[in-house]
Image (cartoon, rainbow, N blue to C red):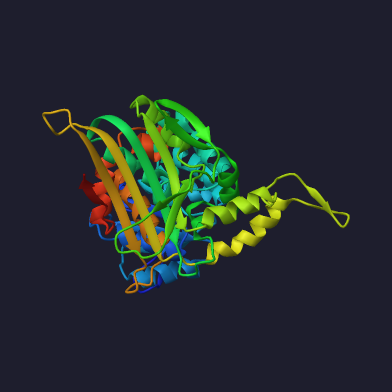
Length: 407
């Protein structure tokens, strides 16, 4: 049976059957900083009666529960590789959120399908994404929804773009710009937009998806550098192509979007630095011989870039620009709608920007699953499952306000 801990952190037995409906309970697999952010968002809602926080080390789960200070947060020890135990806990919950290592996402999602529990995760390597999406048919038959890539940098930004597009009958162009900046001007905080250093390297060397004059295609990443500015920021910034936004392409093609580009925002000359690394072959997967030893340059760079993931970005920049025929005017006027988010480090809570936005995004999607706002069953990326405008509204209710202006 599940071991529970009450608000005073004393161990109690759960031998008596639980009386609460599973619709009132959420399982969070993982603790730490991101877990605390997610629970902090979920606990604001009285409809959620219980949040099980499950960690390998009971101390971690207990610390999180103490930090939140709400008796509805129930810490427990759980090994995410012990699938029988995982299924036992999932069977008591409406939704499970996984912060476990990405390579466990497939097996945990399978356990969720078996227990008819909705399931969502943050982004991970492509193998983890495919393992979850492969459960589409089984999830449909079980009547549950599996949603990977629930962080703002992946599925979330796609949902922002779709919400902006909803206001138009025809779209001439869609531009997505996403950036992370740190105080250290010589670093590469944009690495943290990606799930790992390896994913970042792939994005720099893989062609970037675009739509030009209605035709889907690709251009080289690290090209078409342009200056970009944000109100209130004095830093000199630039934006350039990178391999992101592939999941959006079919949706944009269906909407007959004429032009589409997805660019990252970074400090000036960042693209030139990255291009130099690529041109030197430091992102290559082919091994080279150095003093009789075989070295794969990309693996060396993965190791070196790993330190960049410990830089603390203190500023998030998002700008989504849609131009087209606006559907709220009698005349067929061409309008431009801009969605923008400028989010700084919150010194009052000392919560990292990445944790704040991604914790809010996945908490919002989990709550939508609890409330039955997501009607589609199966294994689906957020852009195919989550109502986009409702997502934007709920982000605002959770402290992430997307500024909108028409020009």
